[in-house]
Image 1 (tube, chains in turn brown, cyan):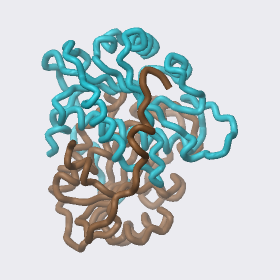
Image 2 (cartoon, one colour):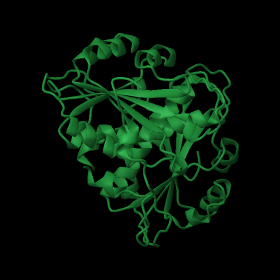
Image 3 (cartoon, helix red, strand yellow):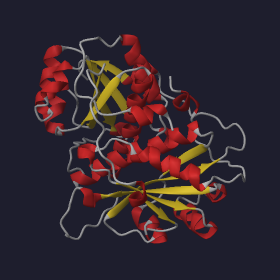
Length: 179
Length: 179
């Protein structure tokens, strides 16, 4: 198995060792190569290093104070305009029923997971977070209402061991030929 | 960069070389280790090798005849019952507005992408597909209405080179500190 898949775990405690711009670029490059439906590539990434913005993100993200200590946060934003190309007004949130929103969430999640695995390969640790509402997080980053924040990924060097979350047994998730 | 990310491309032409049960197990094991919101692990995988079922899947998947020649298809099904635990009746489709559906699509997409990258590491090729409707694909596999098929992944050995889809330039997807 890919070592990066095996070793990866959600890390919420980081050392003060900085993450370089070059490392961040490599992470985004790995996301750039992700597959997407009809090659629509809905993903966009806001790199956040400023303490005040990290604090605000942590606050609207269920007050997860540990996020402020991550050297970098990557705010991962899906853009529905790759699928709905007219200039109609679109407001997206957790209760939207648009089929295209489901597609851009799927595709952006794929790209985000590339970032997490690439981070492992660079010796970095990471954590997906999504404990926010669109109405809570978008204003913090001046994100328009027709974009959807799929996740905020913390990136840094792990401070300590951490532990892996338990998983369902393999046989519970496999079926053959039909449900 | 992770070689698997760099090398991966959507493969729609497969040789007749079979994929072993052991290889499939390794793919699902890689998915099993994926992160998910609140560790809900909504994913389930139906392994399809039977020709008649592969044909029906290809048919409801916008008649993508090439799928019949993939040695195995993995139908990736998200289960909302990891989040909505009561026994209320739930019918999911592309137009559902449930916030939990967005969460299970995101989390299942993460696990699916592990399968694709792990396939690369095993020398296999793959292709995400999702050109179906829930009403079209669920009956083929007897999947209940409260489950959502996030994708069907074709797995096999590539027959030929194929080509990578073009991607947006890196700088078009990166912003700093705000949108």
